[in-house]
Image (tube, rainbow, N blue to C red; front, top):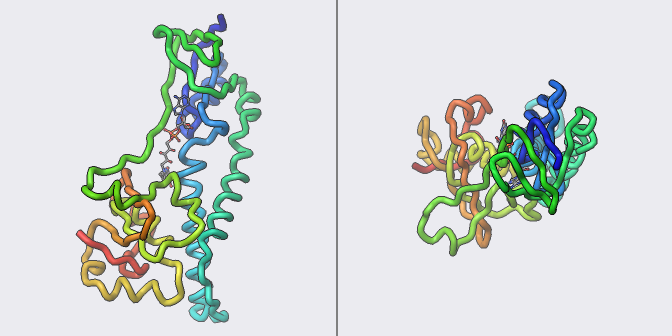
Length: 250
Ligand SMILES: Cc1cc2nc3c(=O)[nH]c(=O)nc-3n(C[C@H](O)[C@H](O)[C@H](O)COP(=O)(O)OP(=O)(O)OC[C@H]3O[C@@H](n4cnc5c(N)ncnc54)[C@H](O)[C@@H]3O)c2cc1C
């Protein structure tokens, strides 16, 4: 039976840092990921797709505002399928940095599969047993669906599917106005020429400082809930809801 110093379960941002750091310090490390690819939420469903979507939305907004910079303004109508295609290409590009070979190069063994514990120091994965002095569980999180009556029947989006939508919903409700909810709402609200300012200015709630909650409805779609709310981080993103076409509701 193989004996390791450390087994890290979960190949997302947390697990990758721990595994590569420990291996470079000279420990015998095995990293185990249950999905086919390393990278976890940050690469596949979180930081990378959200920041890429924001970038595309900003480019669209700048194109429309070209006249402000002495340039011809462009009619930047968004085809969300194409924008999300760009998002997926960026993910694929960054995936090279999370190549298992890179971590093997640091001295980690990298295994794919879902292990289970046989005792506090032994796991089994795909019929093989592995012993270790220490285990790090870095298996991340999944979207929490809030207990809202009717939500299950109405359907909703989460971060697991919003970045691969083929079509922009006409209306979308974002539940949760922390940084993730706000950035998603801003990026999607910057979709259509002329839409940006009109909606927000028409709604007094949008002008209320510190107004919480964002709303819009996506017919036959699923809704997104932001579990990571932090108003200061939202301000750090430079978001002004009323300037970005987002009615806000308490
Ligand atoms: C929309 C969105 C935007 C975000 N933007 C930012 C941002 O701009 N900046 C920022 O710092 N953070 C951001 N975050 C948060 C960031 O994505 C998370 O904090 C980060 O991904 C957490 O990393 P983790 O390693 O703890 O978990 P995860 O990334 O979830 O990784 C866990 C890994 O464990 C694997 N796993 C699960 N169970 C098992 C098992 N039984 N066996 C083996 N493997 C298993 C999973 O497949 C996954 O690969 C954002 C999140 C979201 C949703």
